[in-house]
Amino acid sequence: MDSLRTSGLLLTLSLLAAARPVAGADVRDQLHAIENRYNKAQSLTLAFSESYSGARRPARTEAGTLYLKKPGRMRWQYSDPSGKLFVSDGKNVYLYTPGEPRAEKSALKESADMRAPLAFLLGKLDFAREFKTFASTQDADGTWIAAEPKSPNLAYTKVEFLATAAGEIRRVRITGQDRSRLEFTFSGEKLNTPVAPSLFAFQPPAGIPLVESDR
View 1 (tube, rainbow, N blue to C red):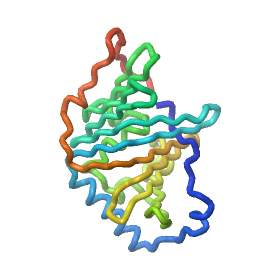
View 2 (cartoon, rainbow, N blue to C red):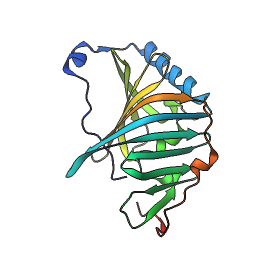
View 3 (spheres, rainbow, N blue to C red):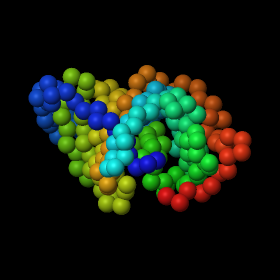
View 4 (tube, rainbow, N blue to C red):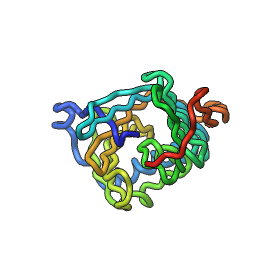
């Protein structure tokens, strides 16, 4: 991806004014609720909107449907722009954007794309292993948790996510090393619904070559 995306979907001033710190024990309980919800799931389908903002790049918003299936498989099928596709088969990720002369392939574990880490949403969530600090606030929609990764070598420096008491993730904000921002808003989550394996087999459009990404 270009780096990160967001059109500045921020909390309203009233919600910010009402936000209160969440106690440490409550943070742990919330993280456990999220881990239990998704680590037990075999598949996941939901609608998403995705927004990005970065230095010297225009803000951009896109949308579509996300399919996830253990282990590490996902399909970002875009309706806006129509035809855009980002797929992981568990080992590699593939990206095709309409109008581009090629489709790109890269190893999932080596991909700098900010969608790639979400492939591990099912079955491998372990916040204590991946993040070193957590800061939390609560508002009318749930609990916001801001986490800083342990590794300094990642493409991002902070992840923030909004979760309900039941552990359902509704929004995710990611801050990149270049201070660009990517935000996902999720809705209509369906756990353990049938997801065809063929969704995760990428085929570029006719006449479009598949090349190894240099990013």
